[in-house]
Image 1 (cartoon, one colour):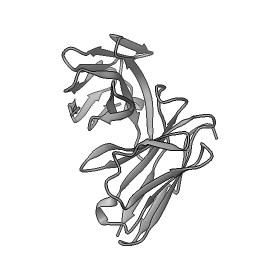
Image 2 (cartoon, rainbow over the protein chains, first blue to last red; image 1 turned 90 degrees about the horizontal axis):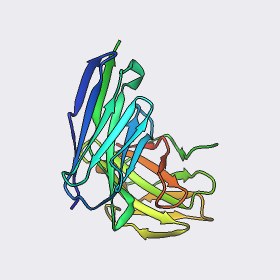
Image 3 (cartoon, chains in turn red, purple; image 1 turned 60 degrees about the vertical axis):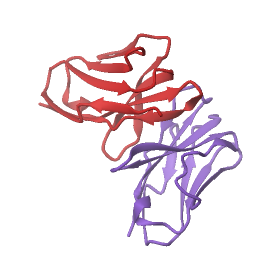
Length: 113
Length: 113
């Protein structure tokens, strides 16, 4: 059974810091991995999607890496801003059910001005 | 609208009542998904629709839960004889096809008294 773990559960940093969020999964037979952002009372916004054959994806100040063999992904946020404050969720899908996202419990990020 | 629309945004009901939650996917999206987000269990997959068919309903917690999709568009999730443990945020997502990224609505927050 695929399990997804995110560490840390919560993180508070001053504005301008670079930071790393971690995601690990137990079964390396994934179809893809996605990072989402969730603001309070809102749905999920997809940030980055990494196919199983890829090693990383970048979008602006965000960079996500994937190491399937070790079952790990990291989300790097450069020069953090107060507007980055949100909960960040990692989700994987399996090769045999690519439509089904399996989520971690999230990292709650606070960027202090 | 351009995004996934869910209604109602909030629902409070008494234990034992039936509730119906609605999801309007992005126009043209053939795949539709329901997820549940609760404090104790995180974000869990409930059911996947391809067109009007549900090839995977493995995440529905009990036979009190059912869902349908009509016209390849709107979907309703029905919970019969609600219990307090049904209290959660119910999120709907859609994608162009099942292998494409999923776009989420803002959810329905369900509270069972």
